[in-house]
Image 1: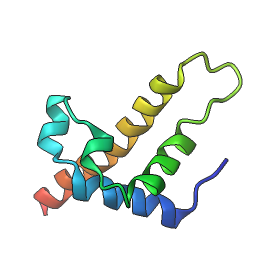
Image 2: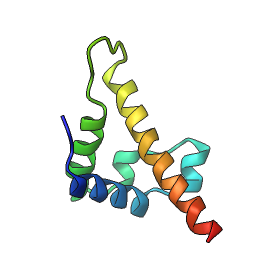
Image 3: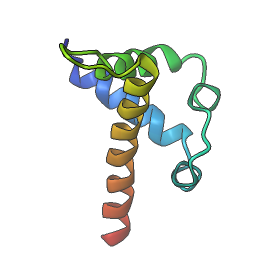
Image 4: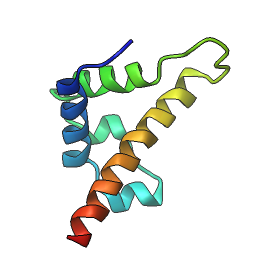
Length: 86
């Protein structure tokens, strides 16, 4: 399943707006608690889409969601580093 570019951008913007990257680096962030209830449905849809299981994928849903969150985190951290270098 593919996610729309607009949904992905909205999820990344939500993530960047609500998650402190320094706290994220320390590793103790409650994603659902940090993101507003109005924005959670799109964010969780994107995360669950990214966490979709594929044939032979033995990871649990929580493991796949964590990896999807890590993917978004890496993108946001790279954007922060890139902005800092400019």
